[in-house]
Amino acid sequence: MKPKKIGLALGGGGAKGFAHIGVIKTLVDAGIPIDCIAGTSMGALVGGYYAATKNIRRLEAIAARFEPEKRLSPRATALDHKGAFFRDSLVEKLLSEEFHNIKIEDLEIPFAAVATDARNGEEVVIKKGRMVDALRASAALPIVFSPAEVGGRLLIDGGLSNPVPADVVRELGAEYVIAVDVSSRWLDRPEQMIEVRDMYSIITNSLSVIEYQIGKTILKTADIVLRPPVIRFEGLSFVHNLEILEAGENEAKYHLREIRRGAGYPKTYRTPIEEFMDFLFG
Image 1 (tube, rainbow, N blue to C red):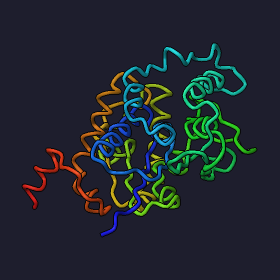
Image 2 (cartoon, rainbow, N blue to C red):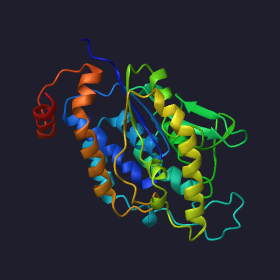
Image 3 (cartoon, rainbow, N blue to C red):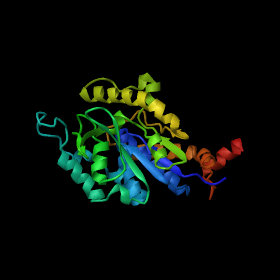
Image 4 (cartoon, rainbow, N blue to C red):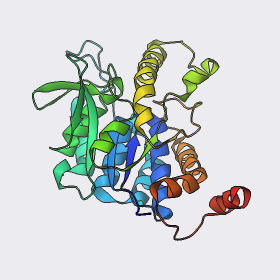
C-alpha cells in the first residue's frame, strides 16, 4: 500500500493547545511525515510554527518557558476604543519576534490558518500572506484580543466558524487526516464544565458550546480524531504547559499503530506502546 499524504488539523483551546506540540513530537520521533497542516487559534500558532521551522525541539522549549502574563500587559482601562484586554501592538510584537516577515506561501509544509469574519460569521481560510497577520487573526479571541484586519476583512478567532479544520487540511491535499481536538470533549461530561464565577468563565463556556456544535460535523471528515485528556485545564491558564504537552504526546503514542495502518506508512521501528498493542491485538 502506497503511503498516504498526511495532514494535521489542529484545533483551538488556548493553553490546552500545547497538547498539539506533544502530538507533533510523537509523529516526528516515530518517523511519520507531516505533509500539510491547518490550524485554528492555538492550533494555528503551533501548526504555523512547525510548518515554518520544522523545529519541534524549539516548540518544546517555548512551551516550557511560555508565560504570556509577563509580556502581555492588560490594558490600563476597559474603555479602550477596541474593548479588548490586551494591546494589539504587544501581540504583534510577540508574533513578529518568531515569524518576522515569513509568508505562508513560502513555507515548505503547506499551511492554512482559519479565522472568522466578525461582520457575518463566515469562515475565512488564510493560505497566503504574512504569517503574523494570519496567526493574529486566527487567535483573536473576542474580548481577550481585538479583531485583526486582513485583506480588508475584520477577523476574529477561527474557533467560532471551524474549531478543528479537518476539512481545510484535506483541501490542502491531505489523504489521511489526523484531527486533534483539545477543547470540546468536556461537553460529553457536563460536570467538567468550568464553574460560572466571572465574565471569563461565561465567555469560555459559551464559546466552547458553539465550537462543539460546529465541530461535531467537521470532525466527521477526519480519518482519526485524537482527544488528549486535558479537560481539567483552563484555556487561559499557562501554568501546566509541559503536563499538557505530555498528554498530547501520550495520546498520539497510543494511536500510533492505528495511524500507521490508516496512512499506509511503514514502520521504521516500534515504540514500546506499539509493541504492547501488537502483542495484545496482533
